[in-house]
Image 1 (cartoon, rainbow, N blue to C red):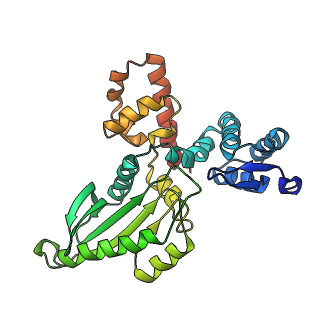
Image 2: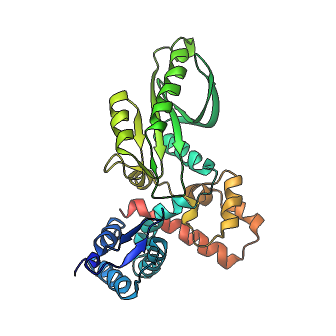
Image 3: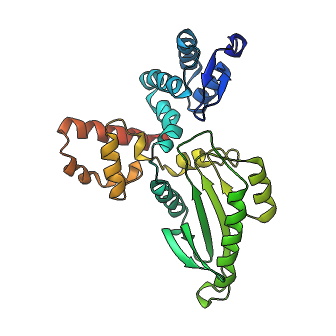
Length: 287
């Protein structure tokens, strides 16, 4: 099957850039979601027969997702995961809560949105995760633009802020024998300079697909952490209401299903939602 770049069907990316459609990229994303070869072929063939100049990557995604959902439901959940992160809302706070949950799943106690004193000035840290003798100071960079890259300015100022906090805490008796690490975590990507500087300065970075094989998308599956924006059986307004109650991931909703009483959903709707939540829970056990 030939790469459609040869026919120069031009599509519009999320950041507004125009590029030639590539069935290789589409096939790769479907493969990463777990779609088998037959399903990949069917979706790629459909998109190739339908695609036209000026179509957006979002429209392509929606069409591919619709087909994948009918063919391989669990794979469609993986395929939707990145898009679901872009739907967390403009504030970035649900993203910070999710990052806090990730650290908790890895044995830390986490606090979100903390004002802490440094040696020179006070700082707001998005997440502070503390274990028995280690503390992670985390800056979260959330974006609704999947094409955005975190520039070098962010790790530069995070490194200086983290260092200011560490200088004071190393003098505090409650942090005796503690080690500290600074983090920048994003749902998008880092610029090459950001990665180069972080490696040199000891700053830890976590992005959607960085470090390779250990990025956010890998962490979500390993820790069974999936945002409620994945759910098809809730409206955007209902998801926002759940955010306000501190429910940001599917496992929280499954464990606190009674919170749905206030939405006055039908028994059939609640049953469908429970089945959807249980299907997402199976993602990890099914691989």
